[in-house]
Image 1: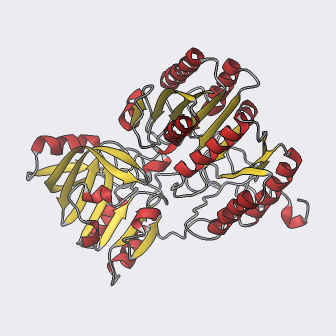
Image 2: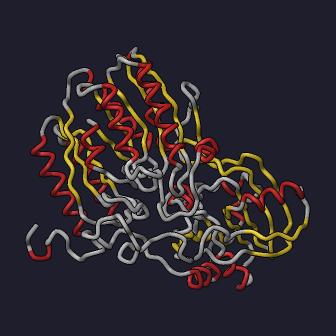
Length: 491
C-alpha cells in the first residue's frame, strides 16, 4: 500500500485583528516532507502515528508538508493558496496512492475562502478520484461543512477538551484506515446538526459523562467505528458555524443517522450547562488573595491565544497591581516589541518599559513602569502533552513585585513548564495567572490548590447571542431559544 499524509492547520478567529501569513506558520511549525519531528504538534499526529503504523505493515508512507500556525485572524490568501498547492503538488507527484490521511484543524478561514478544509479536500478528491480513501483527523473546535463532508470518507475528531487525546484519535483514524484498506470495514459517515453553539469542556460535567458514553458505545457496538462531537467555533463567522454530531458506521447509514440524531438531541437538551462558571477580575483577585492554600490559578479564559486573540490583555495585571498582590506570576503577555527591548537591555537590567494591550479594544491599557529583566530565553518552548509548544523569544520581567513573562510568539498557557523555563518555580507562587480557556487544566490542575475561571475584558466574542455575526446562522441556540422545537415535542 502507498499512503500519502500531510498536515495544514490553524484555527481562525474571524474577529481577531492578528492576520496570519507564512511567517506565522514558520514560527509555529513548518516541516517539509520527511522533516516532521518525532513528536506531533496537535493536528500533525496522523503523520507520526502513520510512520509507526506503516513501518509495522510494510507500507509506503509518502509524507508531504506539515505546517501549523497558532490561532489568530484571517489567513492571508496567497499564504493559504501556496501552502495548499504545495501539498497538492506533492500528492500529485505521489500518485498512485491507496489512501490520503490528513491532519487538519477544521476552523481555518482565509481571505476569499470561508471553508479552506472543504476546498483542499475537494481538490484532493479531484486528484485521487472517487474510489480512493480520503480521511482526516480534526480539532472539534471547527466547522463541519457539507462540502468537506461530501469530499471525504472518514473524519475523526479529538474527543477531549483539553485536547489530551490527539494521538489516541490519530490511532483511531489509522485503525479505520487499515481496516478499510484490508477490506474488513466500509466506513459511512452520518451527521446531525445540533443547531447550537456552546463551549464543552470535558474536564467537568455534563460533558465528561457524555464523552464517556460515546466512547462506551464505540467499544460495545461493532457497527460503530467512531463517534465525534464537533463542538463548533463561536469566533468563526462562517455560514455553517455550530455544533454537529458525527457517527461513522461500518456500512450502516440508517443506524448512523438515527444515533447521530439521538446523541445530538441529548447534547442539545443540556445546552447552557457545559461551560465553567466565570467571575470578573475584581472577584477573581479577591478570591485568589484570600486563599489559604497555593498556588491559586486564575485562568484569563477569553484572552486565550488558543482562540485567536492576541494574548496581550492587561486587565488582570492592572487589578493585581492595584491590590498590591505579591508572590504572583503572569504567563504570558504577548508583546514582541517589548521582548526585543528587554533582549537588547540584557539580563539584570532595570529599564522603563511600556507593554501589553496593543491589539484591540477591551484588552485593558498598556502598562508603564520600571521593570527588572530577570531572564531571557530565545525560542522558548513549553510542554503540551507529548509535544512542545513554542512561545518564541521571551523575557521574564518583574514589575511591582509581580513576575511577568513577555513572549513574542502567541501561545496559550498549556503547562507549568511555561514558568519554569523562564526561571520561575510555579509551585512557589501564591497566584498564577494564565491565558487559556481549558487546555491548561490537564497539567495545571496537578499543582493548583484552586482554579478560578475569570472573564476579564472583551478580547473575544464570547456571547453568541450578542455577537455581531454577518455570516453565521441566526437560527441556532442561543440566537433563538429552541430551534428544534423540542420544548413543544416537535423533535
